[in-house]
Image 1 (cartoon, one colour):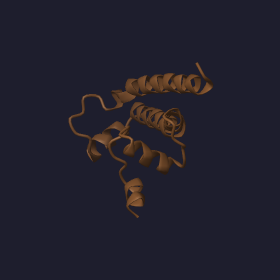
Image 2 (cartoon, helix red, strand yellow; image 1 turned 60 degrees about the vertical axis):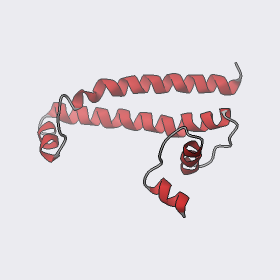
Image 3 (cartoon, one colour; image 1 turned 120 degrees about the horizontal axis):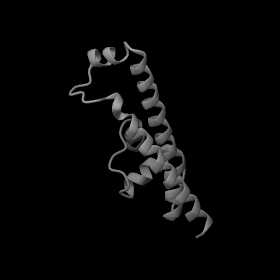
Length: 112
């Protein structure tokens, strides 16, 4: 296995672990039928709810960072592409059919 393939395998393993950890804290949402302001206020009225929200946010952010900062550039390299900025990588991934849509700023920048 070459160095790029080995690095890609390690990052994929990391993404898998981080995704499992994130799935474990979805208990924050419980069996909520609707997540609205009142629901959130009830959750944040107790220390356990605050801890669960912080845990969910941290694990979500960690997974998102790993996906965009590590996995996507490595994947693009493995596909023979030259990685660029995060926005360029997202746009390239969309053009390659890896992701369906790059919403928000990414889409507006592409149209400009």
